[in-house]
Image (cartoon, rainbow, N blue to C red; front, side):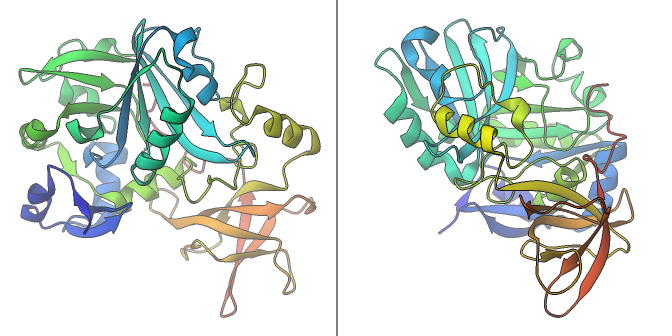
Length: 362
């Protein structure tokens, strides 16, 4: 039986279509539909229930915990009140998970991981942290609600005193509706936004309070996927996996090759030889959306790659996708073809991201 967030009944009451995702019953979309939800995020404010995500707390002196060796980003120079995106790798250089590390205090860290990977990640952390680390999986105690969109700051100002002081990828503890919560200026949409970590059993009050603002729309996982593809954010199991490295996914900038981390030797070898495949982005010449599993062609019947994410983009009015092509594929052509045995559709290779008008850093 799938798990449920503390807001499950609220989703049902709002008429949400619920689907299983990562072992959880989650809202896919609400009655107004994905296009309206997309419009709310890009032009106004949207509210997501992301309580299925996992959170770990690690306490102790950094040099005594071993935490710095588990993640690819350097933590020693990370300031208190900031967040860093990075990866936990296996010894082969593949991605165990992509994650965000919060430095809450000098000796206190929070790591946010993907829902489907909570148990796997927790086992990996416990196996590799040193005796000087106090590790707690607090996922069952924290609900995560994402307030995203150009109006997110204005919506939250009456509830979160001082929120306007949070810079991009900064975090802090705030009192919200009488509860001490963690708020970060982060998100998965490419817009100005905040993620609020609220006590699990009291999250419903925050949800209802934010939705009482007429500028806010509830939004589901369907539009969340559209939004993240438009800005080329990776999704674990698509652009990243235990067999796909951050280098192949074009995310080298989130790996510090000068520090020690699990998988570094494999990372350096791949960096030296070049990745076996590379991620490309493409825009269809029609509204037809590529789908995961479609093949990529340059002509003929021999595929040169495979689509890992695809959708129709309301912002561009066309199908867009991301896929991996083989290392040996080289061409000066900007054209790529996606499809399967039944159809082929022409597309243009483009630089990431597809959508460039976001308010992320406003």
